[in-house]
Image 1 (cartoon, rainbow, N blue to C red):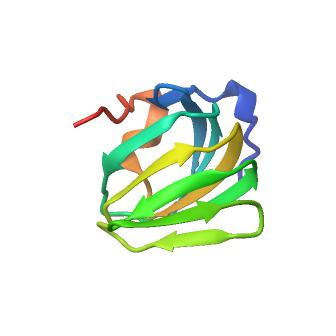
Image 2 (cartoon, rainbow, N blue to C red):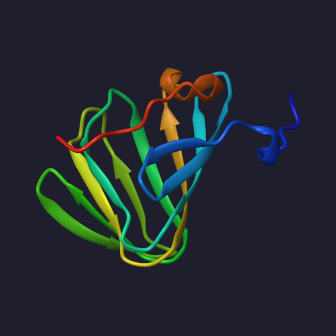
Image 3 (cartoon, one colour):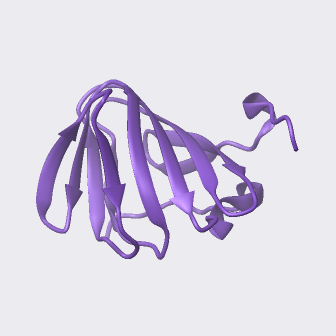
Length: 116
């Protein structure tokens, strides 16, 4: 059991205008993200399954060429290796859950996604 204080975790810059903090447990990583309106998440994929939960705001998510608008109450489940990108339609708070653990998010060492 562990009590984690989010404000004490290293802040990761995922892309310009997208910052967050990751909590890693035995088999999952939970990522608390803040996106500035207009921020772009470059196209990428990873071996982790991902559940995207918009807590506040609106996020446009493109998965394998199909675009979805996510708002609170709409949750997107991405299978491993799904190619995806995003755009913050407004300022957003997003809670992402990854399985298995995102090793690249441990310890604040993530270098961010870059435009291709």
